[in-house]
Image (cartoon, rainbow, N blue to C red; front, side, top):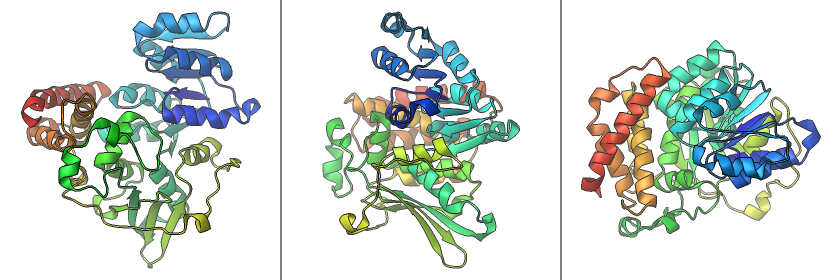
Length: 384
C-alpha cells in the first residue's frame, strides 16, 4: 500500500489503522508536502520503501532524518508521480487541493484500488478522472464520510430504485451565528470545527459549507447521479452521514461516530470489514439526532455549487480554483469570512469563456485552473 499525503489528517488516520496490524501491510511509499520531519518518522515507523516530500526545499531535512534507515528519499513533482506509480494493491490519495490531481491520476492508472480522499480530482476533472477509472478498471473507493456512506447504502440497489441521495452537513462552527457575527469571524474561530478533526483547508470549507457543495459535485461524478437527485441536509451531530431515499418511500441511512477512520477502514478492508474496537456508536448516549435545511443566505456556497453542477463544462475547475484562492486569503487575514463565497461567485461570473471549455487532458485542466486562480487574485482586493 501507498499513502499520498501521509502527513495530513487523512494520511495520519490511515496509518493509525495500519499500525494496529503492521504485519498485514507492506508500505511501499509515503508522501508529504513540507513536513519532512514527520514524514520521516512515519516512514521509519511503518517501514516504507520510499519517502517523498513535495517541496524540494525540504529535501535535505528529509534526507538527514532518514540517514541509516535504508528508506529512499526524494522530492518534487516527478518524485510524487513516481511514488504514485510504484506497484501497490491499494493507494490512499489524500493530497489536498489541485496539487493532488496528477499523482492521483497516476495511481488510478495502476488499475488496482484507489481510496479517494481528494475532492478536487472530481470537482476539477470529474469526467476525465472517471474515464480513466473506467479505462483502467480501477476500484475507486470514496473516503469522504458522506460518499462512503452513500456507497454502503446504495450497494446492491438498482440505480432506477434510487429517488434521491442526501448528504449531511454538520453546519460547521457558525451554524447558529447571525450574518453580522459571521462577517466578523476570524480564522481561529472558523478552524474550531464542532465534530471533526481535519486540515485547515477542509475545516474552512466546512465552515462555509463549500465542502458540502464540492461533495455534491463529487457525488454527481462518483455515482452518475443527476443534479436533481442530490440534496444536502444539516445534521449537527454528524452521526448520520448520508440518507438514500428509495422510490418506494424507504430511506436507508448510514451511521457511525464522526471519526474519519471509519470510512478509511471501510476502504482499506473492502470488500470486507476490519476490526476497529474503539469506534462504537452509542445511540443512547447520543440521545437525540436533529436535522434542518441549510440557510441559503448564510451559506451561499451551496447555491454556487448547484449552479456549477447545472452549468457543466469547466465550471467545477473554476469553482475549485477560486475557492482555494479565497480560503488561503481568509487564513492570511486578507479576506473576510463571508467574502470567501463572494470571491468565488465573482470569479465564476467573470469566467464564461473558461467554463465553456471542454478540456481533454490534465494539462488543459491545469491551465484553466491557473487562469481561474489568476482572475480570483485580480478580483481579491476589490472583494476584500
